[in-house]
Image 1 (cartoon, one colour):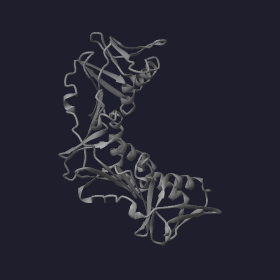
Image 2: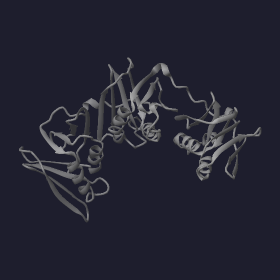
Image 3: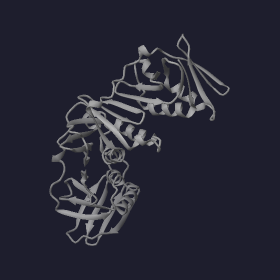
Image 4: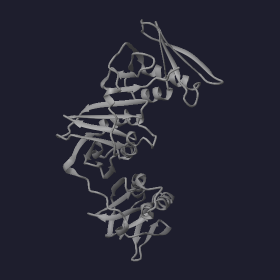
Length: 371
């Protein structure tokens, strides 16, 4: 194989596929990535057997071929190259990769493509399309609420439900829950799937790396099969296994009663909660919210710190006090686009429901902390 390309394209391509590389593996070949020529383009592939990435870069191809290369070291080499020089990459008959850029010369041992796992093809038959703006929005409003506890395997993902032209995403860690529903052109597709949060975080990162001038960035093709989900946009494809297990009955968690309802300025509530969080205990700490006529009083304390503050509030009911993990409140409010949020509560020990006036299809549930 012999190719010629720009340093920028090669570096960006390696950056894109790096997240699917295995850091802990008993298969040394998974520490490599595959580079090969295909249809007059150069394809870069990586996988850890759970996630697979494929990305094409433009290049001048003198001789077709393929090789797998140690990814981390190759990335370091590319990054070290001087700007302003293109890259010549050649693979000799012994599987040695020779790289030339300006006056720099590198040589690194590769391994044949035959030793590398085969990445499944994108299933166009099962695909539907989502505008990138909608995909990024629904991910931003749900992924943060998923569990990071690896022992709760089924909650380490976001539950996707496609039905009757609507796509619903739900994430929970057992102490808070985020749900969003959007009408989409699903082309009759119906499915239920738990998508790993790692994959969704990666999709968000990759869309951020896309060239603003790339028209393909405007929408993402998504294909869901029995045990896999794949995303395709521009010259990049990401394929992942779905999580196994049953997602909890989340509809039972969402409060139906709304005995106490208050409307709050999103930025004010976020700011006062951030201040209160500074004085709450690092682990298991809570912030106390007391709703009184005309004001919301906020209080927190720990061994050496104490905080008191209040913000104006249109409220005329009986005094009502409830306590939350401040980080859950902060993370929820950070992902709200509306100027106002509506807080719905029943008792200090029952879940509270956060909604926005701008988006009736978004709900965020927080379990209170008992004082």
